[in-house]
Image 1 (cartoon, rainbow, N blue to C red):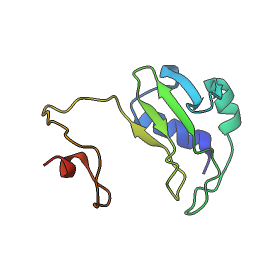
Image 2 (cartoon, one colour; image 1 turned 45 degrees about the vertical axis):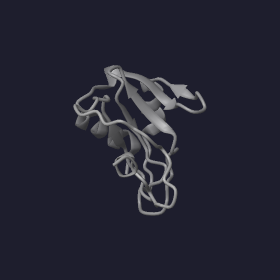
Image 3 (cartoon, rainbow, N blue to C red; image 1 turned 135 degrees about the horizontal axis):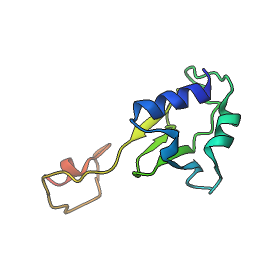
Image 4 (cartoon, rainbow, N blue to C red; image 1 turned 60 degrees about the horizontal axis):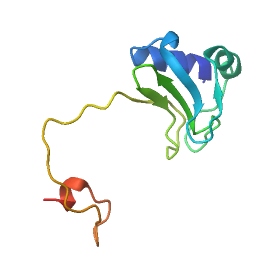
Length: 113
């Protein structure tokens, strides 16, 4: 897999262009680069098979509308995921607790029935 080609496809699929990119790098460490630098460094083949991540897991691309591409750190595969702009749900439910007690993988809905 070529990272640059994969990234261009992910940008197109997200209905964005490279001109809309405002940040490429790590939100946590502050490392950043321009799109031009990314094009140079990312034009490389890598193995995106199960169980092996060769691309930095904290790499994100942020667009001017606040949406982003990211590489899920917990995934066994290496790929881009997309998060669009946040839109508040039309229904509002009160939250009374954030803690699960004995339940595993609790959700706010389950905890606050």
